[in-house]
Image (cartoon, rainbow, N blue to C red; front, side):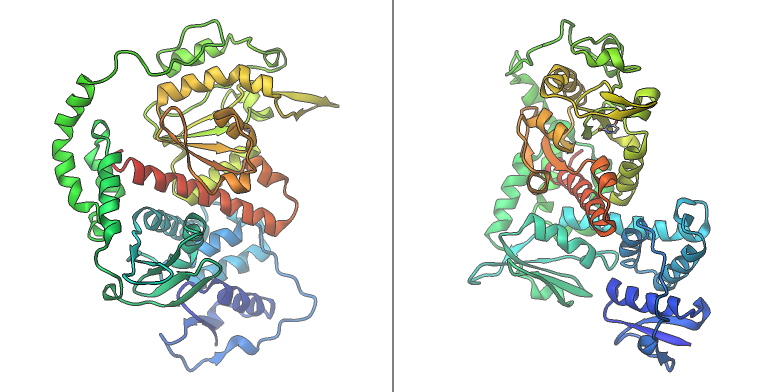
Length: 474
Ligand code: URA
């Protein structure tokens, strides 16, 4: 029996190095154990001296790494061995991960999903407090995650609060950002975090301001923001009084509503605004606002509930979508679906559409190859997108790629830059920009591909966290 020693509860790098050498040296599952230093001691010999045979290669499918990185953060004691078992089986069947009915694949996916949900909660409920007298200013947050999700979630905070010096302290581990580097240290207790500061007042004012009484759905709110997290939220004391007052405030808002919309969208298509998504679909079927309708099989409308709080906007339907009449059902849809699962989002609760509703392509032999739509085509289709936004009224819109970003904002900011900031749109929705799933498919380099995929997941998590923060009542 051999022991692989790990430095902490979510030590993915340690696990990876140990599992790699052990697998290549042919060590069976029943002959290996993984232990976190300082927690459990064994009399078994250290596995760090294992030297794998020269030239032997391990098969690590692209989707294994992001899955394992999440699953390893779970509190399930078996996680290290489950992942070892999975990696060993992948050597014999490299497409094993596609088989969701396999009990091991299923179990690891459940662990990963629970960690994604935990990350999601952390991104929404961490509240930083200023350390009194700190120079330069240092912000500290206390959080009790349900899993060992800090390592997995800290890069999100690094992106969101790059200009701030901060620490997130959990009972098992702490993350620190000094403006240049992210580091980790031992956990601590709530006593190490300042109790109150002026930010608390700021946050309460902000929360009262964004609280939309017309959108109160208490059950959904409690499901998303379990009481467990309330004790650390400065706005928590406001929830009950604001909720109580919401009925009166709704009436007030209705009574004082302007009689005319502030700005009317300019119809560029000679048809009246649809009053439902079903009407929109019927009307869209006859659209001839640009020449793309002539080559496409059909117009592809968005799909999803009119009550969706998050809308995803892609570029245009591809070959598969053109034939099926539904958005994101081809290879790009496969990537999107995987990313949604990892982000803990349910596709059926989202509204998914495209900036352009007809497939633009060029023939290469018998194949129809995607062509990027021209600005004029995006503009011709803009009216439909506006109608969808008007009917769905999402709180958050996610632009998947440059065409969607341009259609929604009129600007073309590099995605790597645009994804780091939220942008308010005229409809009142907040825009989160991210990579298009097809861009991920096109990246040849394995590592860069995995990185881009995890950025997509992170941006979807971020969209969901924004939704909870800005419409905690939805
Ligand atoms: N790419 C898109 O932008 N949209 C789809 O629906 C499919 C692929």
